[in-house]
Image (cartoon, rainbow, N blue to C red):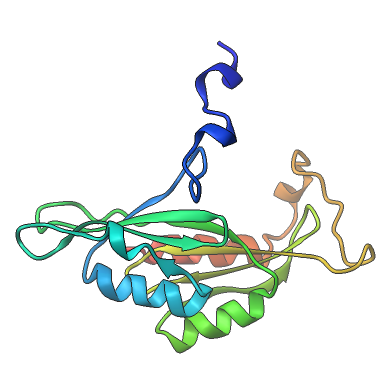
Length: 173
């Protein structure tokens, strides 16, 4: 089956959504998570969508970051911990890392050279979610041309971008 036949065209998807939209389940206070995302990414909650459950928790909320939406709910006591990994394209990864730290996040990976013409940074928020920040390189000289399919890096000492992720994953609870 051709993928174009099973995925809606962009013009068929409601404005503010994409073909794939992450749903973040928060162990703790989803309202505080929304506040965090608004402060770090200048996100805006779609307040008319906020849906409290009968127990007072949020069963559904949404924030818009740039052209994308993140759907949010509070975890119920008997639900497992389900961390989310979110990739965000940003203009200034260091600025976002600073905002995240100011709002209680832990830096996982400082801004680092990455391949594909991007810098990469990561942080873990206080709810255990990992955020991957991608910032475009500013000059052709800075851009790394290391191909994704090159496996020669397996023989080299692991990079900081690799080891910082491996360390963070071991600590997720």
